[in-house]
Length: 173
Image 1 (cartoon, helix red, strand yellow):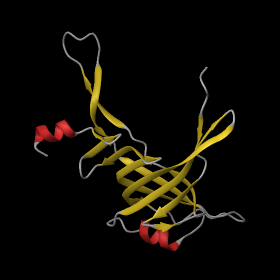
Image 2 (cartoon, rainbow, N blue to C red; image 1 turned 60 degrees about the vertical axis):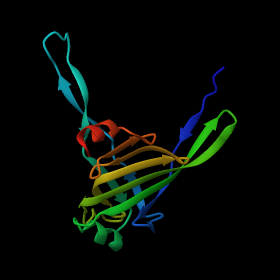
Image 3 (cartoon, rainbow, N blue to C red; image 1 turned 45 degrees about the horizontal axis):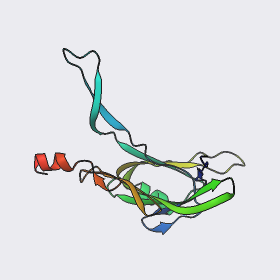
């Protein structure tokens, strides 16, 4: 009989350039890894196929729960890369309750391309959402590297296996 295991990730903490921003970020939208696919069709094929052709641009959005000058000072500089860490605790449950709790950490490097002056409403907390163009992303869960992408260094690893090893060898990179 199969035992059901359910993973829950319900909270996290954000670090910017190593500075703990506990309680300041309301929401983080991590980059969506989107494979670019190249269409291939040819005489003699009964259909069309798509094959991997690269990775689409990566983007991260962070919604801040108030105005933080140190965050906006960093976000205002489009020439300086920023390191973001999102650290969480991944919980696993089964019929007996929580059976494990392991670290899950996303590492990002990029430059901010949007930083707002905020939406201010009467008797409501102002909202500030920054958008970052990401050039490096890595996810580690319980010490296991799930993936690593570095657009500027031509790195794409899944489970520490270099997906571009043959391409690099063939091109002399």
